[in-house]
Length: 475
Image 1 (cartoon, rainbow, N blue to C red):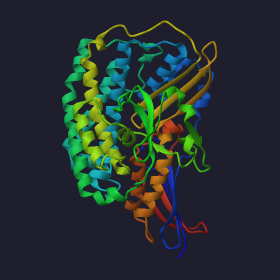
Image 2: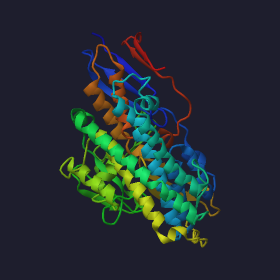
Image 3: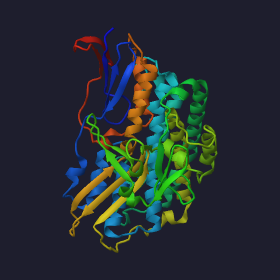
Image 4: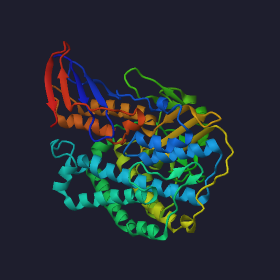
């Protein structure tokens, strides 16, 4: 019996490009599996020399899925560089745009990217395991899912002039007020969005009940959890301190987001361009943690909107109040957060200050250094800029959500491969489960390493001497 190496390239239904190599033993079980992020563009370096106030527009181009997150994080860093604290109405408007981003991103990922696995099955034929297959299987649900994403995108467009790469936030505030008609139009779509998310939650919980055996063995492992929090340890996506808890839910740190470098360090592996952040005091890999929907709900002790808070109580019961470690529950957490985002958008629209025209603070107290942090849909996003006296950037540091989750994704890939991939014949459904371990985290690899280019869709199984043993392709 000969050993073999399996390559999955690219990983599908994610943003950006990655590959997986699965190293088999001679007995046709998995020795180890690796997730490789192997494309690199160096966004931080080529931002050096630009002016700080250009960054909300430049960094939004990192990604077409989460441009709003980078746009707002860059603006927050700009606030700190210039010492311009935005007026309250400006912060409300920025947060409203951010809620639109969370709604459209979470909605798309659950229904269009992860949904084919849950609704059609991990072993469904690749040619139907996509949004096209969902249309055939449930056209009414698919239309509702598309409209949910549209609702989030329309919030972004209303504020920023367009759905992608908005022109809205500037250091010290925003450049456009919200009209009453625009506010009322946003509110008219909220009920339908909530209905679709509640339907998604029912689908997810029904699927979990029927597939509990998989949930309990699909990449379940302990880590810490990291993200923003309200002063009362509530779910927070735009402002707040950073909170870090251990695998038992015990708080290890709570600190101002601007001080992140006192607590975080990044580890490098030779097989990936994506770094591995960790908690300094515990070292690597002992100090690894997870971010994003699962991480944030493990951190949160409450949610300040009624419908999402009721779902949080159910989520907390999954592991008797301790952190939920099951990777597949990222999908459940994602829907709860999207529900919160719709409810929060309504609360923001109903705040009297949301229609104020006091949207820009022009008084400067220039510092030359600024850190902007928020919770992007995929997790904690950090923009750190240092500028000279003329505002020209000397140093840029970006730690994106997917970077924080790099260790967890890599560990999930290895765990799922060892659980599901067994020879001698490797079936496509086995490999799809490995990809699903990555999809659960909804990675944005364009954000993390700024991938460019295109990769072939092909899996090759090679013998130790390099000869081809088996080929699996996707049309």
